[in-house]
Length: 99
Image (cartoon, rainbow, N blue to C red; front, side, top):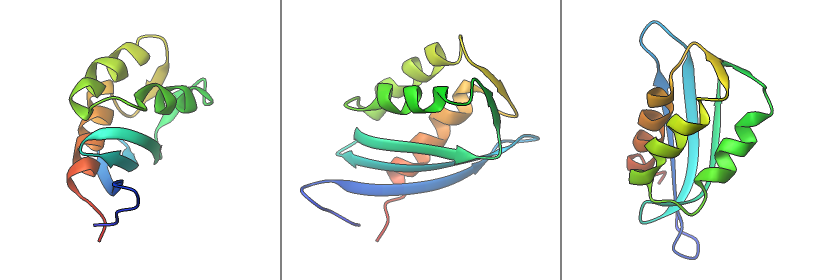
């Protein structure tokens, strides 16, 4: 586990069944998101909206992330994944801390 000022770091790759890859890198304090980055081979329109999602998760407990992610994808088009896939990938990253 990498810890700097109480911050843990986690990463996960999640292959959506019959879909795309979602890669997550998250920095958190006890499950509260400090910073998160989503990458992968999914398609999103508008592309620059991903930064908005990442910023909206900052300061939230991962248990609250699902609602924010679902709301976000109501106004953003995505191909190859669903909102719940991003929530699942984030949850996996929180659990898979980097050592």
